Amino acid sequence: MQLVFLIVALAVVWVLIRPFKRLRPYTGQVLVLAGVFWIGLLFFIVSYSFPTPRFAAVATSAATIPRFWFYVLIPVTILALIPMLKGEEVPDPKWGSLWRVAIVFGVLVASLFAFRYIGYYLSSAIFLVVMMWVLESRNRIELIAVPVGWVIFSHFFFARLLYVRLPIGTLFAGLFG
Image 1: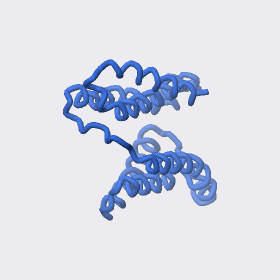
Image 2: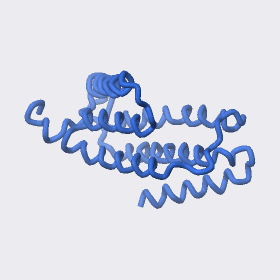
Image 3: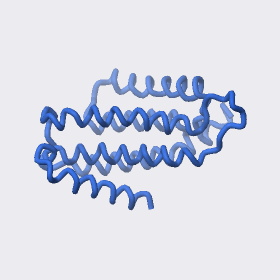
Image 4: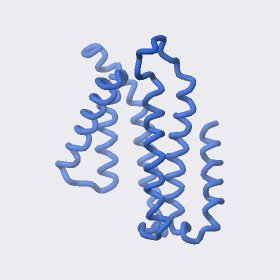
């Protein structure tokens, strides 16, 4: 059902930006921003159904992360729109690469399913390497540093700072369980 709402929201955004000639060359980019914002808003709304801690002294809960990311998405979306409104952004190409979109979507879905078996850390690292490769990043240092940096950041930010237990996967549950 949420996919239907996403499609409707993107259609509404498309209808709203069509009258603005300045935004027409950036239709794809605006729709991507709207889609990401919609997903963030969805997670923000769903976070209100998460259980709340019993103790008032607890600073974080399961709702902390989706709300934090949504609050970060607001200025990021605005900052991404400003160059488009000024006409300083590179316009969308005439024809996009549908095979890349399909690969990104397929790898994203595979990564989400892989969480259960190989855990968040390994799954997200593999996802980043594949996405960087698909987007033509061939620098070996970057292909290693970005996923390793993300895993380290994720571990310290989520697990150590916010005490959010990220899935380690059934393959590693015996080792780290």
